[in-house]
Image (cartoon, rainbow, N blue to C red; front, top):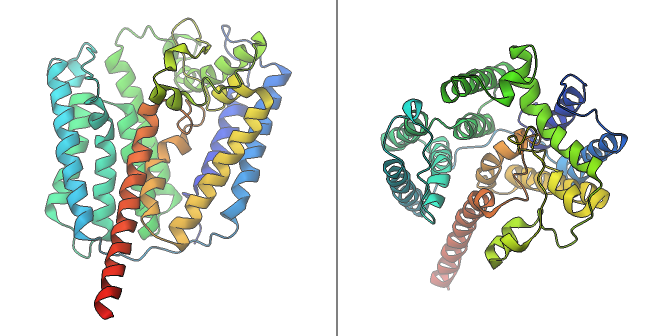
Length: 374
């Protein structure tokens, strides 16, 4: 059937759609795109497309059959919920314990413990995956999902978390039941509406780059939020900085693990000294120039198509990793969620570890069965 959640197609379309939208010379404070900016954006998109061809043509989509997950999967999921939800509550109390809509934005992050809070939305995704595979869903799983989502909305009010819930849940649902484009569009409209509402709640004065950068506030909400990210890359390209062949920005998570992240020189452009988000290829160009925006998008396209292929033809467990990557797939214009800081990559690594552990358990059981039959 027609897959409206093909990750490679979505990434490719969103990249060129937002790029074409952002290249319009509409704002006074943004410089017009340079010729090199047009080249960089175009060849990175083409490179991603070429990489995605590796496995994409071999992936004929069929609906997944329900497959009851082993008890070990449930144990790991519930353990993660206890750990992550506890971390979330502790940080919430540390930040003052108020409702998000009344919060003054006090940062309650606690080093180390914050990793649990970051992974909490993905616990809801894992629980939903468990529900979809169960012949009869457990009430406790639905209650935990509702508790996590409600906590995020009421106590945290995070647009990022809402995006994870909407995109990941829609993606997983589409693997097991046919889903129309209208349903996907409805979910995205709901997310956009809530996100705009959150902007007003958190900045009631309206003094923000998103609302004041253009004369039309309705255009400003969408145009500035996207175009400013491209503008940061455009400004960096105009500055003609030198390369960083050690991958100062591209391999930031690796340098963090080694404890030398602060020693790696990086230059992040900010519009009006306040908006530092940029498109996903910023780090690649920052470090390796044109070579970077050709190589890394190609690798990302190839990796996504391989993961997509595995989720269809190998184990449905790979759907978990694809669902966790939905935010990265849908917002290439708003940050690099593939090669980034450890705090961003960590949910992918932990999800992969969960998948790998299930494969290991399956292999161990198979070996035990063979031994008993001898």
